Length: 98
Image 1 (cartoon, helix red, strand yellow):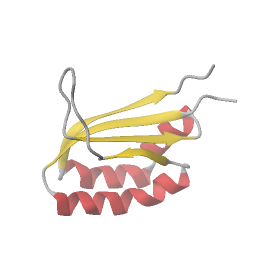
Image 2: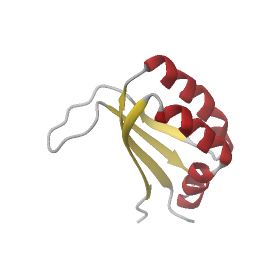
Image 3: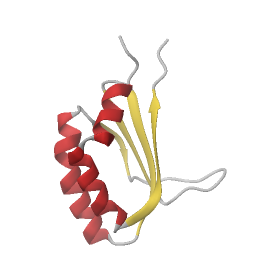
């Protein structure tokens, strides 16, 4: 079985109304690729280093699905909306399997 894939994003939302449009637009590609939110902006404390105030962790069935979702035309359209509403970083990482 292939390890799961994860998106880890740290964002600074500049325009909450536009960001809500991004969330609506990303719902379909996330559903299509089996995304499951593990963290979605909850309370956080930065203990070391610096991060943006909003953190999101999304689990996918595999690393390949996580990459395919990001590269899909549906997500790329949603991303264009996000770029107008938030600044930050997003990484795609392969999970650890024992």
